[in-house]
Length: 266
Image (cartoon, rainbow, N blue to C red; front, top):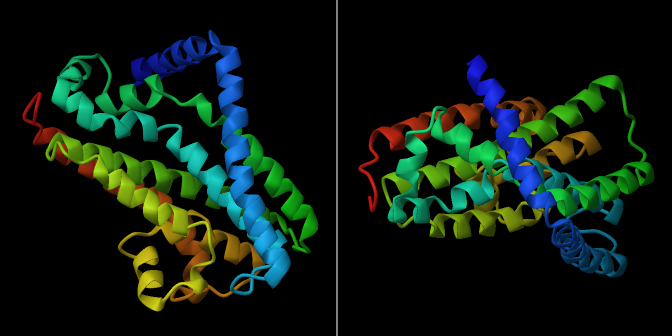
């Protein structure tokens, strides 16, 4: 364990130095990301300026929801998206086999050797929008609520990384699995909106089978004191437990897929 902990900073350092060799491209990428999401958020703001609210959510409340959604995604995806999105290709080309003989676990190597600092634009925009929304809303920030809010961000980031790990791991036993990311992002797009605007079957799906409602809506609703469909008073504890729970599930799924991996080409 101690040797692994020593290797992780080394892997991260190499990756960051590689990206920083092209600082101009990195910063342009950050700006482009921020502008892209800002454009989407501006369109939502204009919509709410016309209709006042969306499912009972005003623009400052929606801004907090959008910021939470983007920040949790960026933190979780930085450890998982690019690394595990390419698992299908790694299996087909046989490059995953080379990872298996490295002195640290394959998940650790994939996650930290590819730590994606290109999410800097996401994080900067999310923090800025979150700061504005918090100052615009009359939230009674008790110490407990602050701790809950921070813990909920961590839990949502863990959920993001766990889901992406599970999708990527599937390539070890079912090579053609990259399309599962398209399904994930379809639901992820919906998760930036209030859950109560959707039909009840979709609400149930996004709380149970595809729990992306926990990525932003549920913790934000708890902070704002809004009702949460289905969960009710259990929304707060559930939003804190969901991240660690899915990390455990992702670890079990990763180990299962790794045990059943048959080598290059699947």
